Length: 362
Image (cartoon, rainbow, N blue to C red; front, side):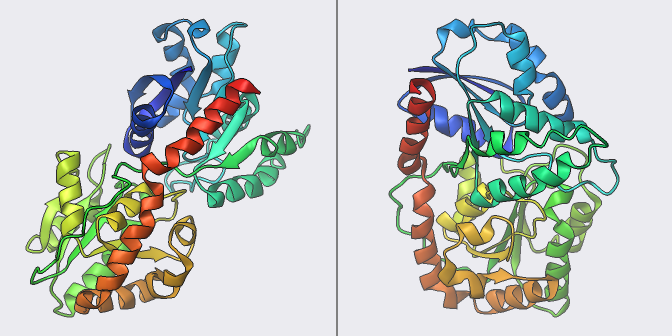
């Protein structure tokens, strides 16, 4: 069948997901995109842009959109010949942490709600994400001063489910490289945004370095605005340790850095799946992750005690141990890499194709 995929924020995990689905699906999918920036303008205005940029909707059996646009607006201005629509939530604005410097914009939560109501099928990228969305939905609606539309809760939940995104690595893994470096390489591979909580990461890094413990450091990840002060300071403070600073020039270079890595760390306050962590583990990095968000869902339970942490002090202790004793993690490195194979597009795309089949055939 033929599908139209509209991605208004073509960057980061959104870009990876869209390209992966188009490349691996058995269906013919036309992808139309907008650059991955100015997310508020995308949510409010992407429907207006796409209206004049896409082929006639009559050409398509179904429509795929993601959360950073108003599906309800797009449906309203597109006329009666509207195909069945699947809405995929990478994030949502009901549970997204507020930037302490910015006032909350309630209208974006309302766009999420009306988009979900306008879709025929709604998918979330993790169970954690779906659970947090539904938990907050009622309290969000109750913020309304009157005429609270409580009916929308069941309306959305009945057509919502979970489907993890695919990841861009082979389903069959090559043997991991033997890491014989003199010093372990610690990797940060997240967007340089406030929600990724880089302060907690550098708290541990600075404290370990202050004890005279040596290691290498790769600071990867996208940054759309000016470089945050904390990263600029780290560049100066750890210049002798840093082997990569900023976004890798290519996917190949990015993967090569991950293959050289020993430890990957997340300190995120917001993460609904964690493609960057899954990629790093797949290529041989041992993770240290918060005991919250989507991470306990991604990481097999047998590794929770050793590789999840509850606060900054526990991160510091576990990261210090991992740096000093990284050769002890050889078996975990291999077995965790094998576990992440379940997220390879080649293995997970059949579930997406079934969703698209059911979307049209119901």
